[in-house]
Amino acid sequence: MKVTIQLLGQARRLAARERLELEIPAESTVHDLLPAILKGADERLSSLLACEGKLRRSVMAILRDETIDPAASGLLQDGDELSLLPPMSGG
Image (cartoon, rainbow, N blue to C red; front, side):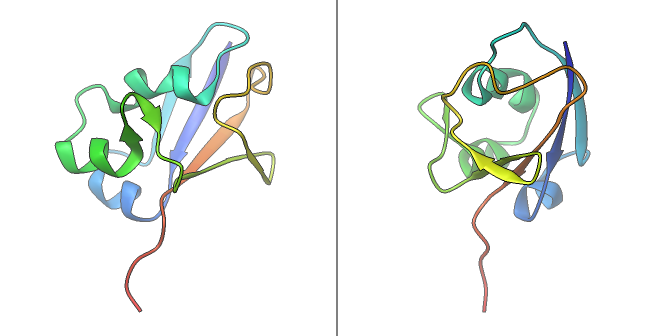
């Protein structure tokens, strides 16, 4: 299946591009996608999004306008767009 990953907030500023298209196996979780999302990424982006190979708990994974559990399988479908939103900073 093909999914599009959209990086938002600080992640967008740190990434080389704001959208990535990935070919993934059925039943993939958001955690499963992290190696492909972070391939070639700068260390700041990697530490912003991931911890110990998983999406940080503070990063929202948004699919079809709803926050999803990054460990849940079977949620991603062909053609989906998944948005990753790290916590906002500043004031």
